[in-house]
Length: 377
Image 1 (cartoon, rainbow, N blue to C red):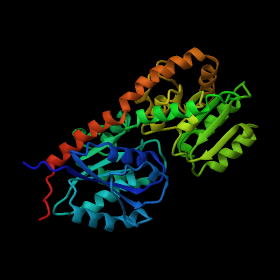
Image 2 (image 1 turned 90 degrees about the vertical axis):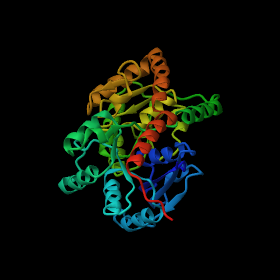
Image 3 (image 1 turned 90 degrees about the horizontal axis):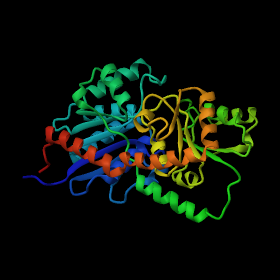
Image 4 (image 1 turned 120 degrees about the vertical axis):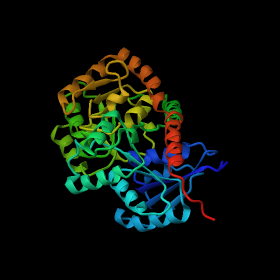
């Protein structure tokens, strides 16, 4: 009986600080080492996600700064190392992974992870949609981050429901809680000048930070400050909006932050104003840190995480006025903030690394068992 660990090659185009990078890095490090041998291959190895890498997971730099240049090196790596599983995330990377193993005599099991709602994003175009559908139809398993995304994929890409599964993001709940508490302990003697609202994500229209700034500008308490963590193409527009609404002196955008707990430790509340989401990783991080949250319904992820009124407040998507009203309600009601924070900590445990890694472990082993790879002599 073969008891050697299942070999998994995780593939990312880069180590930028996005949710896909965080998830695959977290997952590679959390899989039981007696059952799995994980390697992470990346097209480009510079980037802030390097800070998240587990020391026992080998990093392979494919030296391919453009995604299309990864095909040859990735295919070569698969042919040499013969992993049992090739695991990719993000639509274009998933297409590249599918192409890299196409036609191989000894092909690994292919697991592709979808990170977002395709129906609500407007940047795919017919050709990319067709390629994505082609890739997903050839996968042994497609992982969706939320149930709504899974339902979309099955319908839009005509996928087999039996090969399409919802597994939420793994979040280092314990680590975030401990790091947040450590920050609180170090700053407990420093008084805040007023409430602090925190948002986090790529500065892109999807994330709805324009709506958050509009809502923030209409709040009554002029002592309130807003911090938006992240970087992206909408920075200049968001800064201009803050100036036009007269709140630029109270809106801080410090860029990407690999350790958001330094801000979450000081946050009065956390807001996710997204127009659409695949999951909402930062929501779980805020819950783990004990911060009460306000979220747009944002198809599809937040509804998988929050119970409106019990573990957070949810508002209609794209509605700055409703967002502002929910924020104002939490700023005023300290008791509600406390109840949501306590319930949120318990909710976060559903998405902890051990829980989600266990689900992925079962999926990976099932796919590997159905796709035996010829071992090198």
